[in-house]
Image 1 (cartoon, rainbow, N blue to C red):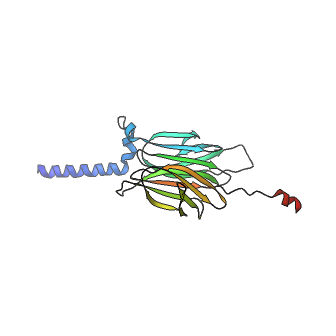
Image 2: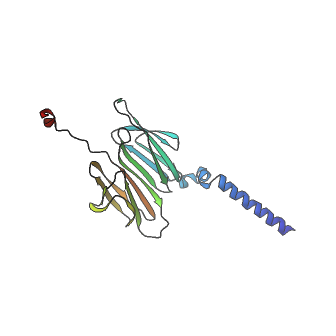
Image 3: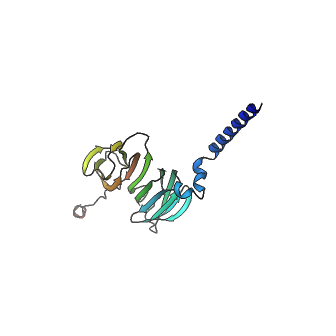
Amino acid sequence: MKKGKTALFVTILIVAVCALLYFFPVNSWIGKLPLVSKFYNNTSIEIFTRNCTAKVSINGKEYGETPLTVDDLPEGEYTITLDRISSDKDFFYNRQTFTIELPQNTTARLDIEIGPSDTMQGAVLYYTPMKISSENGFLMVTPSVNNANIYIDSTFTQKGTISNLELPVKEYKVNVTADGYESVEMPVLVRKGYLLNLKTFHFPVPVILDETKMIAE
């Protein structure tokens, strides 16, 4: 009789714990424990906007203006919105939204110039854990324009995009170019056990009118 009650109690306890974890995931509460938070919330997001200032919201919460670094975040998915601040009424700047993954002990970086409408120049970098056993790291490069040329340490690597390129762990210089668009060049750090996601955005090259030709016409 006692064994039956014990088994029933254990079953109820397991069901209760599973239900608790389902409705209140570990990530939502463990990072709030006083003695654990400084070790668990060890990720950060760095946000820079070139030639402009932008208001920043992360997961719907306002964090101020760029440049901005937000530390001590728990791992998880984050939605970042940037609203460029401008008094120039001749241009309209759209809100820009980015979704990134933030594993423990990593830093995500946004380095963006927000142009009129939906144009942008710069890059977004963040890491994704890899389940593949390897001493190396991995790199993914996703340009915003088609037929981009991707160079790693000044060596042409691929046209278009790069997916899960395995590389030795170290710092590299990535340069992305495309006809008719401005290039994006920046250093990246490939880490063991992680996929580094690099998304690049490119301004169209300004069209320079030939004033002499215009006058002649």
